Length: 379
Ligand code: UD2
Ligand code: MN
View 1 (tube, rainbow, N blue to C red):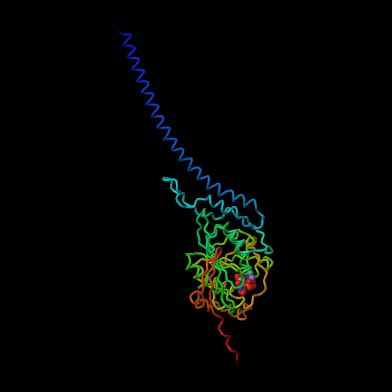
View 2 (spheres, rainbow, N blue to C red):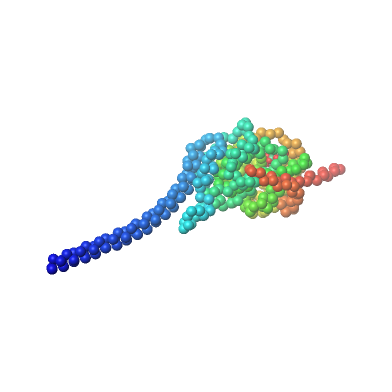
């Protein structure tokens, strides 16, 4: 009897132990799957993080490696890296991961190469330049995909009959600006007709029309034939009006005179308005850049410049264009900036907009800007 009792008791104990084991096993399974799912989630985030870094760093080291190379456009690298970069849009398959905010762009862009080899002997076609720059959007716009730039920059180019130069300009500048992480749009301001050319008035038109297109806060005014030889010369605006093209091949890579402000310059919207924009009354070649310099100093600002080793430029060689003869009045006019700048400028700008065409690599704005007033009769 007592044996039977003992057997039953043992049986119960065994059952209880078995049950406990089962419960224990179930708890273990629940815990295991819970932890596993969390780990899985961590892994997927980790992979995303690596994706972004992996795409950011290879081109950095690649460009550093390419140090003294010609300024090739490396079309294969850009699209592949940008496909990998976080787009800022929510990821489609993840329901509970929030998208990483895009960080501000670094002060010194990591992918710069420094000194560039610039030459104008190779054949250039617009098709080629378009192929090299697939990520520039219609109208010649670009926004860095992986960081938020502080400024939005409009690049304004005065233009007439210089298609050949424009191809080189676009070929060299788009990749440079992209490496510089600039948020930009390119505006070619084309003077229609064959009356005397007026560079500064076209630049005023460019300022006005670019602002109708987007909310720019920085304006860079560049000749179509000037290419920077160093991508550390950053195309954005500074605390003071900026003169970028300080050391040109045609001037023996030196500043020709202290008050020189020609070639490529940049002003923030505030700085531009402070000087009432540029003069509209300089018809033909010369003087307008000195007038702009006068406006800047007369309004209590200083010109800021890059280091002379960085501000180097090549100008595509050219003859003086027809209908852009030296302006004989320029010497007198630059003596009078103080008296003229308040009435002649962005506040008095008049022109007729004829067309706006958005091409893949730039926006063309064609305008009629009139002609010089008749010269007063002597005597
Ligand atoms: C110098 C200055 C320039 C300006 C000019 C006097 C340099 C490098 N540049 O240029 O900034 O002050 O003297 O006005 O020192 N353009 C056309 N079609 C024309 C005429 C001019 O597109 O028919 C445009 C084009 O963008 C050109 C710019 O105006 O680059 C300046 O004209 P330029 O190149 O004939 O004058 P340049 O080289 O003496
Ligand atoms: Mn020129």
